[in-house]
Image (cartoon, rainbow, N blue to C red):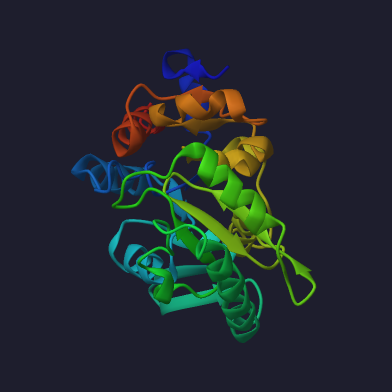
Length: 269
């Protein structure tokens, strides 16, 4: 089981150069962005930690985050692209040609629509039209949560689809089932992003950490030696093959701010 933050060694936190983080219910809480989160992001930036949001959120949300929040960049739709604003302007880098992803997305959405026709109270996410690549089914965003048994049934049906003979990836966040075609993931493009902005090199993994809250974060928990879950991940721990090493005391963005405070403290020693 994960350890509490009280067991953290501040010297290990001092080594962190890159902090990759989920967004929904990790930086946010109950559909809102706490002011503590923005303050924490600004403080991490001040002490030299490069924070990258790695999220299933749509391109529309990612555009706003990359332009407005104190982040190094944003990896969106579970690795389909990344966005970054710097002194040269605003740039989007795609995992694969954008038109190919759009074509597969249209076919996948049509297939999933056929499944959802059997569930009268479940639909696509309201931000589906702002997505470049994935298809998101709304299971808990601004609605009564779909029962876990139904969610798992849907997930299983979606992951067994194929699009033009291509397999479909599907994963659960705290609010959506996200489905897509392609080999990209939070992990693969988290690594690719760091390489691009670290002179083509991947630093020692002790210099990279991740914060998350859901099943779609397991790949990141498996990859990195030091990872964190916010408190609201606890109900899922028993179902996870790869757990975070530490868990905060607070939920969502409040837990993220708690961790950020410790990192800032360590960096100030």
